[in-house]
Length: 64
Image (cartoon, rainbow, N blue to C red):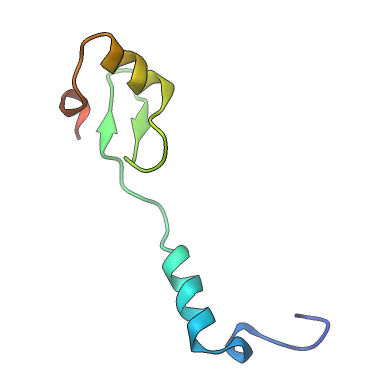
């Protein structure tokens, strides 16, 4: 794009809306354990949380 002198404004409003949607910034933490491990609730469950749940704890036990 830079070699042709184009900007994101040249791509139209739909492309700009996509960029704003994905560039939302950091996601707040929803789950945390006593060791300081944290998870936002997005993506796969981290290993520390999966191990704790397998050990008998509930997901709600880690809610912030």
